[in-house]
Length: 267
Image 1: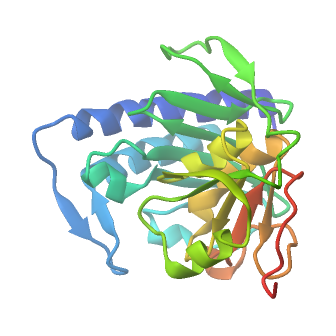
Image 2: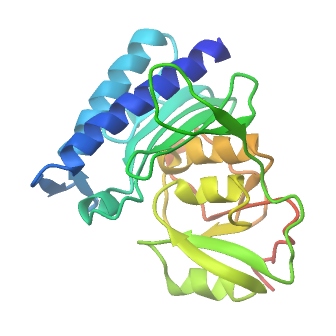
């Protein structure tokens, strides 16, 4: 893989998709429909998906592509592939809360090694550079990359007072029960893959997810977090989260800065 080209293409497509999403987000009204799993989908999801998928297929025709909005891509199994969630946080989009993201990732041998997460309403852009390190680019965003700053997890999280981030739309009692096992300094909530990015920048130390997610929900954020020195592990046995699983469904997981002392499920 030409990682210089990959970084350029993923960044460009994420920004273009974000512009299209914001056109719809800022319109007077937009249609919201329900998919077969009762999750919402809008014309913004579909427009962003079409743009990104066409761009990736044009630039990387030999790499398998998996995208949330194209069910025909969900049956292919490969260890190396591109994976897209064109609008993660559709509920946040529909409620005009701003916590939604464009997500594009490249998975190699089951590991998300490169990714971009763009939150267009918040004007925050995170991605891995060609060498695999993660940065946040500061806007305004143009065709040419602007100023970037390296990002990294909190190197010395205080286990006597952690900063925890949890889902804004998918909190449940099991998650709250698990979080209660830690000593917290504070807690915040965020939608979509922004939660990974808050851990990646050191704005949070721990993000547990005890709920259903798919690989396209997590791959880009996972890549950004890994490139910032963080880790994403399964909730049950603390082994690294793998990608390319049949059906692309994730187990429960924990994203964290490595200095955090993880609590075992049977604690």
